[in-house]
Length: 229
Image (cartoon, rainbow, N blue to C red; front, side):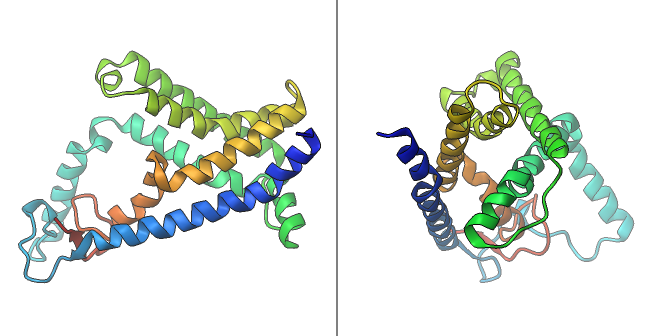
């Protein structure tokens, strides 16, 4: 295939195809999860760990209860992992939205522009993503209990998550062949979009179900639903 034709294909029709698969996959998974949940207040006995904090607790008792919970959660046991994971996920979700080059593409495709970060700040955030990714890979290799539950699939998913940022950075920095790097950048981003609803990447969407819709010990807000078994 002619390289120019191939590049135009992955920059045009394949982008729309990956977006269509991504959006339809999210809708499918959302409907599937909704069928697996039911209202908690329908007479069904709720597991004790899912019960909300009694309203009879005083503010001091509620504070002590929450403090005890945090102490025994991963935040209390390993705050470094929580901090690095938070930085990694925030950067990986927001950086693609505000990269200057992506803002130009949006304007070309849809005719409107959006706020974008400076190239230097985008490089800084990309660097943070890559450093965090290297930390997670190293952790899986050197810590025995983490290595014991790590499979090739985990490395593959982590590598795919980092690939769009690494190739995008290399392309912008003119490291290696630009056309090859930008092609790999586009393809890895499209592959990631396609896989999000059907792989471990779905946790970025499932987070909102588990924290805001399902009653459990990590709930945020006032969720009203539980898993239906």
